[in-house]
Image (tube, rainbow, N blue to C red; front, side, top):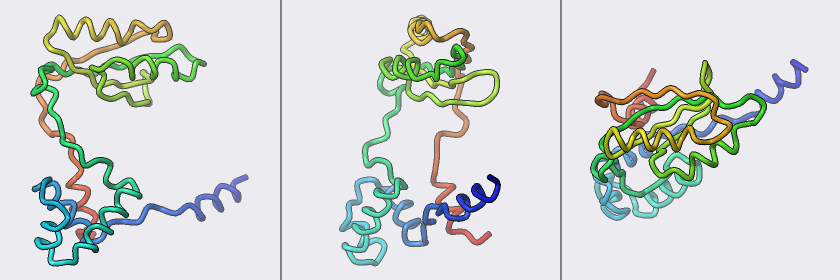
Length: 172
């Protein structure tokens, strides 16, 4: 069996790393999301077709997940953010709970985790009373056996990916 696993790992291909042009394109799109393909080609000094091809390839590879605007929940009227750790009844696979969570608009993310909990959820609410309502909805599924919630007081480092882009094009 170990030989089979080694062979499988050897034949698995890692995703192609981004190159300098990809990185410059991603940084430009982050700084100026409305630049457009023509504007990006002019700024980067490459052909319009090159920019379009690079974008298409990065979308196909999953590097670029969306061209949608980044929305701030607080700006939408949900200034309270919390993280809930859920423990799910063992042997159930968790699928029904995940489907339940997906139907609650205030659940922004849910991740399977290691440790004492099974799922970590990022949730938002209008205020503390609304947060209680959302938590009640989250834990209302019969397969949720226990939960622990912490309220986020402030965000010190926003979700970010550009340092990874800069890291990939910097010699190590």
